Length: 89
Image 1: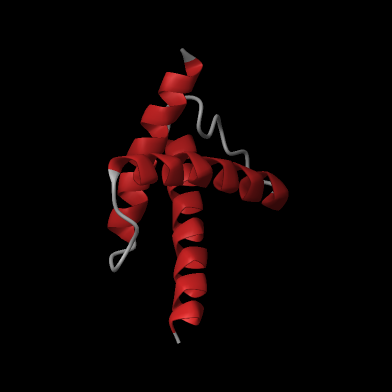
Image 2: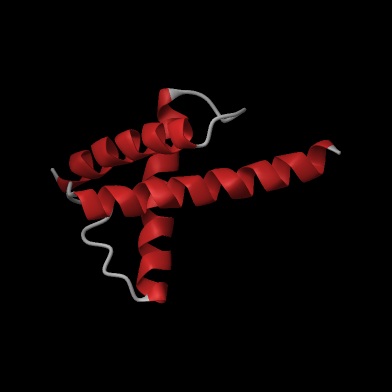
């Protein structure tokens, strides 16, 4: 049952992250969910390395875990845009 919560949080984090970084982004519900789950993992990793308690990022809903997940989504989107932008030139 825990994986269902992770997927739901990932989907919401993916939507929020894409909303906060307007522009040309990858599209689709499945990609948004994968982006959100990956963002939760990246956000948790970075938060732990910086010394911030990320809460239960990606596995339970609270404001801390959602903020860390959305920040991770934004990092992934930024990296995606740098890679695609460099390839397009």
